Length: 406
Ligand code: JHZ
Ligand code: SAH
Ligand code: ZN
Image (cartoon, rainbow, N blue to C red; front, side):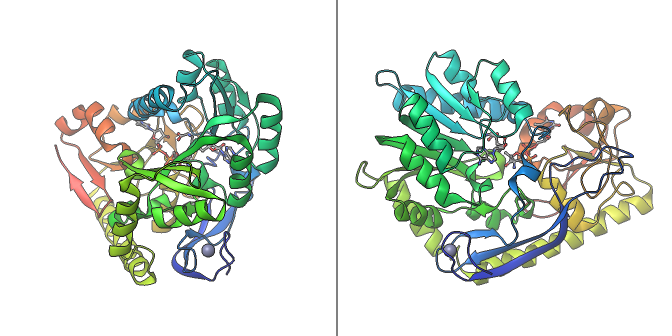
């Protein structure tokens, strides 16, 4: 098995078996075949990049019916609003600035830029969510970003001051083409800013459900600084973010254009000290994952034997890995509630648990709720205080299986 970036040898360390597409919610009674692939991860010892062993063709995942909406969390709306405001006051202050967002989704970030009257473009291949962005006044190009797309944007709009991507770069196997495109598009002093789930947090929290079809890479400062270097760029800043269970925001500039912030060397040193890119560390992670599966299945089967009612909360993409890897179906979790219209009335991929409007959660409350959207725990627990008051218990499985009673 060869590294998708440097062709180095991949060292596999965790295997989740046959898995469905995480965002392919099934229409009940639909005779259409579900698509499955082999979900496993490996470490490239040469370039320190953790990656999936099998690549799912991009059109199978990102298309007209792609259901995920960035605006589904109020915390995320605030997160992107403050990032947009920061870019507007730091990087986008020259005459007629221009920002390009890769994977702009429903325009949660770019609508703030559009409202400020600043020139922008979202590149978004999933047509349905791109339409939602356009309805907010965001300028969108329905396309996958790659080297060729960048050349077209440069020809039409001129160079960009900032290229930004949140939870998108780690979805793209063909990173060489992306870096080439960014190099084409970015003006000499411009920056490429992207944020994705952080390998350090995934390993520390054993948050194995970050591993699914759409997440092809699991970045660290070590792997990103190498990627930057190979393309004439330099990692000049890193910022740890609390969202989505722990992320890092990386800032890349052309080599020599900016002085790296001290945070870069600090994070690189911390990763070295934690032996983050060592096979032994990742094998320990895999052992914790197996333990979580065992404890979660034991807990849920025990609850079924007691006759307890268990619902799921948040039909996340991540939950596909947990539910299918643990063999959790409607006999253990009666339904999953979720605010996303395109998920409601459907069944979770592979595990076939019905997805319902959150109104069903209180009608009546279950005894236990499996918090599948654990990355939004604070937001969800704050709006579901009535559940705890009614005697309900949350089941969490990150960083290990535990029960939370208010
Ligand atoms: P959430 C998706 O992952 C897919 P998912 C993708 N690959 C990725 O990287 C991240 O997003 C960014 C619902 N919900 O954010 C809405 C409620 O019902 O954890 C969502 O369906 N009530 C692009 O899907 C889901 O939960 C609520 O109060 O793992 C959350 O999905 C809240 C806050 C959310 O991402
Ligand atoms: N930035 C948003 C959306 C993340 S979802 C947020 O953080 O919430 C990831 C998005 O990337 C999807 O909307 C998907 O359609 C898009 N995407 C996938 N491959 C892409 C590519 N090659 N270029 C641009 N966008 C892409
Ligand atoms: Zn490699």
